[in-house]
Length: 157
Image 1 (cartoon, one colour):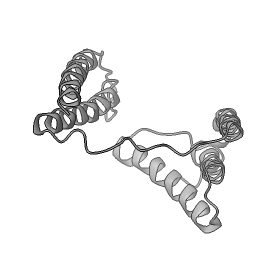
Image 2: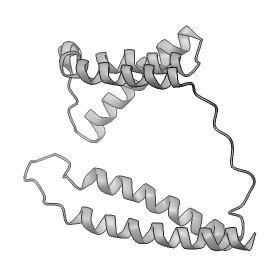
Image 3: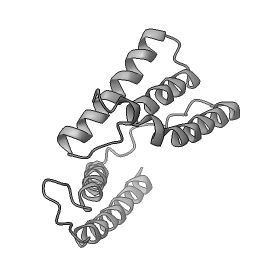
Image 4: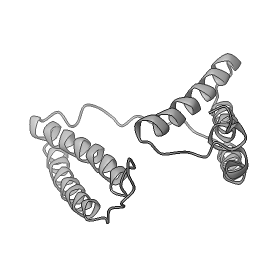
């Protein structure tokens, strides 16, 4: 138990140092003079904020002695065939994205991935893939003010 606590304390300290270094580098990115647009440092700072929160949580757990709550869960075995089909779907998505646009390319990608990883309920597949794509699209457009490619649905969105 003590060695696990020590490992987690050291790991948390290293991760926090890496996160602070990453944040310093992200803040030093050059700014653009585009009105109402996010700067180049926005997403790196979002990522490093999450990273530092998780590293701090590990530090707090290690200091409280709660970092070793049980065995590491075993991930489900995924066949090589599933990996290959997932990679093929991702490549097809990258080829189709410039022509179809974000929404029209992502809906079949998400549906294919849901099917490949075991989802069998067609309503859930359809609702999930459409809902996730629309949510991501509108969060980027309205919250981050970043235009994702509309493609063939340009007149609708």
